[in-house]
Length: 413
Image (cartoon, rainbow, N blue to C red; front, side, top):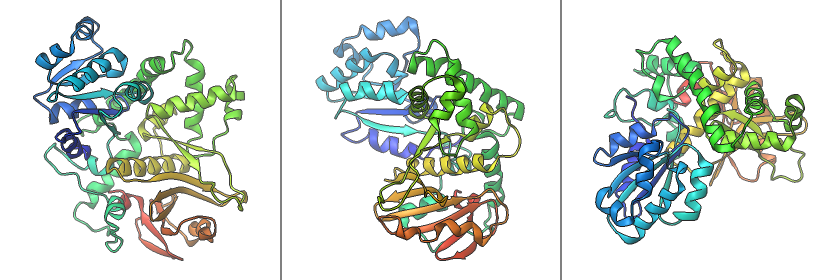
């Protein structure tokens, strides 16, 4: 099994006076159930998806919950809002019980939480494996911070990553695996064949459409959504044109926007908003949509070959996003594009300023790859702390004007 960075946070939060109710949400199959069973072995596990027993759970009074299930894990809790009310009642009447609530859909889970558990719970999100997590081989093996995470958390800019570290071969192997299969834990073990991994991903995409989207959107006809999903995948990492997608599918632009929101709140995609605070500059206002997992992206596209440039960009953006979310860094994510075509693939805003990142699939970075950073300071409203070009070039290069070219594999492991 792969260890998870969130493990220590879960334990820490659950032992605090404000951690009597922990909400753990994230996409289906990110390992939420496996993780909490491992961390909380003495908690009773209750599956809300069992139609036989769920009615019995719904009939329990707060006193019965307190005496029978004082410490419990409730899985897929969003499917039964009545149980959230029961947990609220237990919380309000008894000081000792502690609960872990799991759910795979933000909108249904968080809507009920806002109404019932506001001020009573802590909410954590869980994502597919990050590259540092993929490097572990057991629950007991500590998850190391990537070079990028160290930069964000400790401002460790002097420790430039060198290729000849003792586990470079492992890091490169994991990075290549990630580009092919993504980061879902169920298929991360080496003893699973490639054909089995591809089959698992196909089933995942099918289950997402048939269960998660039906639950989330109550769609009778899944075909328009599936077509939208496919077009978003084809155009991953590019400016999103809802009107064009709508015309091709035969739905309204608002329907396309709604479908994209469904993909976003079910943790399938990441929507990058355009940075647009400078009213003196003409900036493009369109969003970009990146798939959260490159294995799922490739499965939707029915693709086993090499990633395209935009697909590689999505894989890197998603990994950066997961890594910052995993360490609970306070950051906002944007892309930036001017009307004359200058573009920054990822703009990360933290309190002190911005980290600007260009992503290139190339194995040979050139000075021209840093051209979009020129005069970027004149556009932004905070200082630029770092400028990076990330690529498959295994050399580290100073491209001038504060731009460093670093191999993506070293930046993210």
